[in-house]
Amino acid sequence: MAKEKGLVKHSELLSWLKSDCRLGHGHPNATILYIQDP
Image: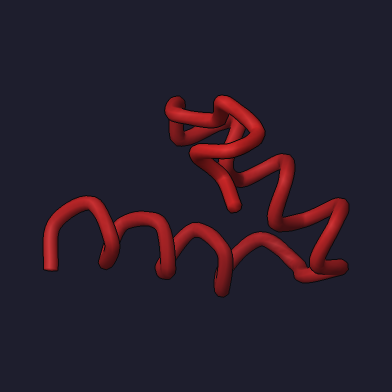
C-alpha cells in the first residue's frame, strides 16, 4: 500500500501510518524499522 502511494521516506511512512491507520508514534516507528532491516 505504501509503494502504491509513493511513500519511501521514513517520515512519510510514519505520517501515513499515524493518520490513515490511526496509530500513535511508537508502533508505526517500530514497524517501519523492522520492515527496513528485519
